[in-house]
Length: 109
Image 1 (cartoon, rainbow, N blue to C red):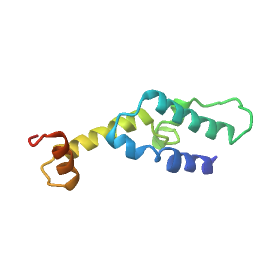
Image 2: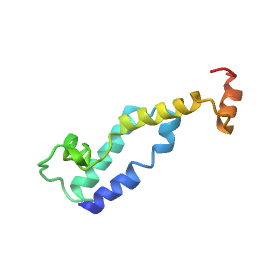
Image 3: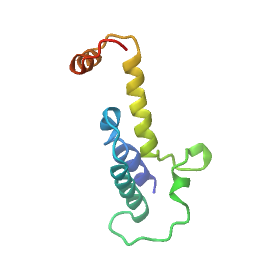
Image 4: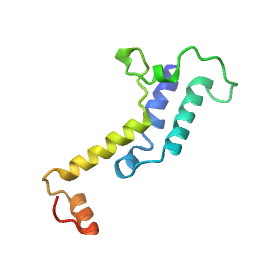
């Protein structure tokens, strides 16, 4: 199971990260990604579903709390979006901020 968990954490969670910094991804899309993660972890491919003795919410908890450390995609999307907003608010003169302000006509904070 550890190899499936590694693939979930390093592939299925990281693919939408870039988009999460720029847009709020619809919940339907995030639910579909979560469904793919669940099927991948529980079914191990094309096998028929089996009985799950641990809930998905327990698996998504941090490792120190008894879970497997799979992050919730909706909360990760909100955190990425807020981080981009925070970086936009900081008083640095980065190129990407100049492009955004030039495109949308906002010169002030």
